[in-house]
Length: 298
Ligand code: HMG
Ligand code: MG
Image 1 (tube, rainbow, N blue to C red):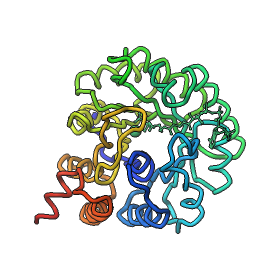
Image 2 (cartoon, rainbow, N blue to C red; image 1 turned 180 degrees about the horizontal axis):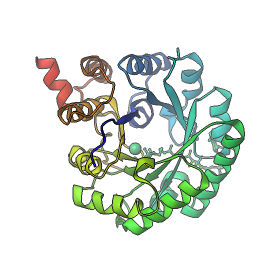
Image 3 (cartoon, rainbow, N blue to C red; image 1 turned 90 degrees about the vertical axis):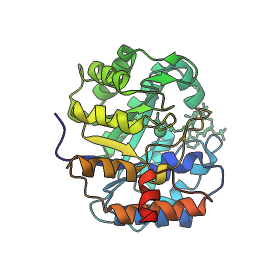
């Protein structure tokens, strides 16, 4: 079942930087995105058009999209919570947008100040407008294994929200272990439930590495045939509405795993690792990626 080729979705500039304590200037964000594209990443989530009072780190996303030198064949996506966010993304020519929901009521309230049902209605409005504008919409679901407020999440609930988002018109559903509590068997059970309703090739996995389980979970997902993986250079970030959650799995670590399995990905690992060390140094720390640390010592 293991795919021959995997598509990496680089979320560092959005999911990573949204949770960094220090303010990062627009020029640095742009440099990061351009370096990621140069290292071979073909899909980069470059910013978010959310309420800047909720996530101040993403306030400058319009400038990022406007000033970015775009490489051909690279998708520059924006995260949007509602129609207002979609219009802001459209105004700066985002190549794609992503909407987000959660499998947990409590998390949905904390993250978007509404119920799951209302968040699906907001997503529907974005998808309608995007379809009219000829823009593709990706869908995220948070808390697919566990929730910081509700604990373990029933795979049937994840399958329900995923099917709703997919039926609304998202071309791909990214399953997010927001707090990074998942382990491979739980992840496999969740994927089995979701893929009862949605083909495996329309699913992506999005792991945060809080408990160090992300690579093991990715291996489990690959063995079930998942071929799209979200990751963040240097393991940047976390989630502002999930206390203590650490960053996404590091892109460098995923690339090393894929190399070991003979799976194609199109990334230049030394160049990516050097980008990771550069942004980490700016943030005053070493990259969370073990691979980046090992390559630096070579
Ligand atoms: P709300 O306060 O309920 O919104 O927030 P509202 O509709 O009542 O509007 C209140 C104010 O927000 C108004 O301004 C609106 O104009 C403004 P005011 O009149 O007070 O001056 N507003 C906006 N401003 C800019 N852009 C917008 C926008 N929408 C409303 N798009 C809302 C509801 C959803 C907007 C808010 O809760 C929000 O922005 N939440 C975003 C939270 C967020 O970004 N979380 C992190 C991303 S999700 C994630 O990281 C998980 C993921 O990585 C997967 C995983 O790991 O699980 C994807
Ligand atoms: Mg995330």
